[in-house]
Length: 259
Image 1 (tube, helix red, strand yellow):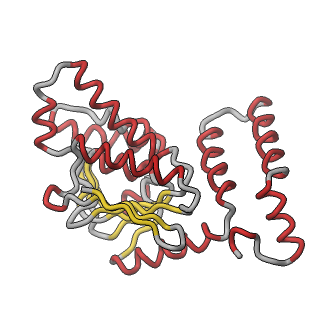
Image 2 (cartoon, one colour; image 1 turned 90 degrees about the vertical axis):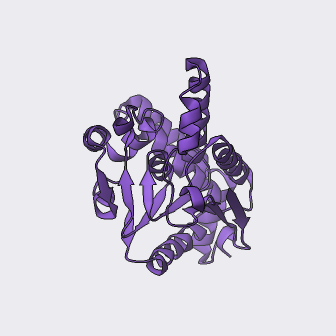
Image 3 (cartoon, helix red, strand yellow; image 1 turned 180 degrees about the vertical axis):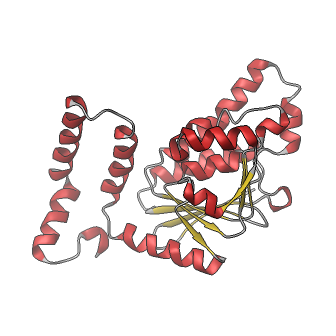
């Protein structure tokens, strides 16, 4: 259902492993993903997390059998179930480790939500994205905060309403994807380059930078925001990492996290 490994560099790989179901979500997979990212986020040995899918698809969204069961649940039961999916996405979105999504094949519904929550995304050409909920009489409600934050309202208004499929090039144009690759080998090379840069960065600073983006995005540049950002850099300058990073720079040596 889900594989979770960490190599000696601290690179974790979380792989959706329901290839016979195109890695579609059900209750068990949602719980497993949530647990994996909670655990990896707290692990000081982890420097980055690569999220991918085994088989022909990255993630085809909701499992049909799961959706069929949900159709017979009460409103309260459906709400509780939806919150578990939302909690999973929030766990990925706020994970203190950099999250890299390697995307291929079909990416539908909640699979698009996963992509929206990743910090860096590379899609292999041929990947097909779709927010298909309205064709089923539903809406992409649970994933919408994450997708709209990533793509903006204008793109969401089109793709949420039409449920058209779109490819990797269109996904990049709307900022859902950062890079496209013609094949898996090229995608791996792109990720390897990102990992080199992440290894040169202080782990705590990376986590703070990720939170910083979330905290300042969409806010007016007023006195309150400027004071918050001044407090944040002051705290970083006096942190152990900040002191070590500046000392290493002046001493012309690598900092301890990249030695």
